Image (tube, rainbow, N blue to C red; front, side, top):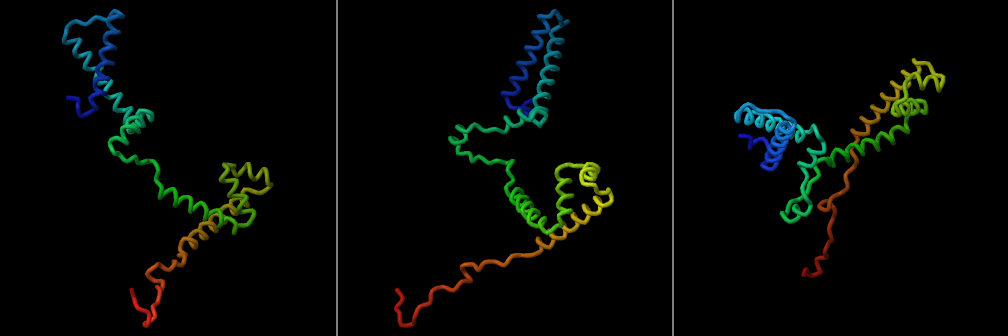
Length: 185
């Protein structure tokens, strides 16, 4: 009945835990009126343990979810399983790093005030803190920040729209030429 919910080992663990909990209750003096009462109590505890385990595997317990997806390295090599890190999204990381480098180089085009305001925003400093430290008005801070973001965004669009010239491929490069008098071997 519950085979589709968990693996056999997990079901056995849930049943053992439920049984152990009932035995602990009996030792504390709880009595049951009939065998049906014991069976119903055991079933309720068992289903509760199954639900707890499923919630843990679904992500409520990050450690349990990680252990569920884990593969023993020794068994993986023996079974010919190729290990893949699903958490590593290489393409997204490469694109983000490229974009970060581009922002870093394009930020050099901003004025020193614009770089100062964007740097304070990135560090988490509030407008009031920055204005108190630098002596600026809130309006100046707002305008400089707005212009800096616009200029950086525009520079990013221009940089993204420029396609670098492609290197010639091996098919486009001229190959060796042979003199008509030279025999081909």
